[in-house]
Amino acid sequence: MYAITIPEPGGPEALVWAEVPDPVPGEGEVLVEVVSSAVNRADVLQRQGFYNPPPGASAYPGLECAGRISALGPGVVGWSVGDEVCALLAGGGYAEKVVVPAGQLLPVPDGLDLTLAAALPEVTSTVWSNVFMVAHLRPAETLLIHGGSSGIGTMAIQLAKAVGARVAVTAGGPEKLARCAELGADILIDYREQDFVEEIRKATDGAGADVILDIVGAKYLDRNVQALAVNGRLAIIGLQGGAKGELNLGTLLNKRAAVTATSLRGRPLAEKAAIVAAVREHVWPLIADGVVRPVVDRTLPMRDAAEAHRVMESSTHVGKVLLQTTATT
Image (cartoon, rainbow, N blue to C red; front, top):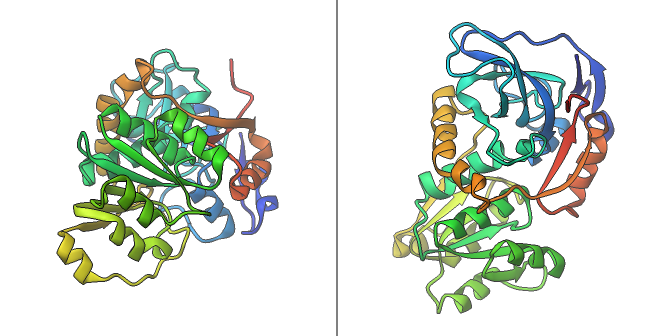
């Protein structure tokens, strides 16, 4: 098969489409013929040499894919050769074939194109696990999403609105904010021009956000705590603004607030399977009913992954960037 390899860390040009050995499914795994994959910030970090795959995972980038099952490993039940699926991966999505633990498979939602299904596994698993399973967002609460126009952000907006929450977003510029508003965002904050702490306070009559979903990290840590409501929950899922920051514990104590930080890629298989099962139960019906949909900025040939990474790093996109193989029929 062919896959995107990274012979040496570096810029987008470090991604090389090369012939590699076919993977073989082991106990409890399936082999998926990939139709499409999606680009995530973690892929960019891996390309740069900053985020290696966990032990035992594929060395190729790609944390989610969609395709068809072409072989079953020993002990797999509930799936058949030919099933159309999408999958949460620890790596290997930028390839024509990938091995997937059966617990990380999802059926393609009813009514959704197979190619577009690659835009779902990572974002739905990340948002559902952090916003709902960890931070316990409830109806009528206010959720602040940093990076509202990103793949994570566009999904978080829709899921929060689906459960009856009020949604605030930060994004860069009026065009991205307009797209967030189309998805249901109620409070629009241009982080280039406005102070999100001040804007959240204004919009909530001084109360603050009940839950904050943060991709920035250290740069926003203190201000995020300031923006939290009493009993608020800050869920950190990214470090685009650095890994080390100062936290005023007095403010946190006075607000009786909580700060959590999680990653998805390196979790044990059982934990990822539980998250995927929760997504299938709670999110898949919303997608099938048209209440929630993947937002895709563009689709590029997989061999052009370097261009997809340039798009990702330029931050000009809204939603997901997909990579498509030739295995579409």
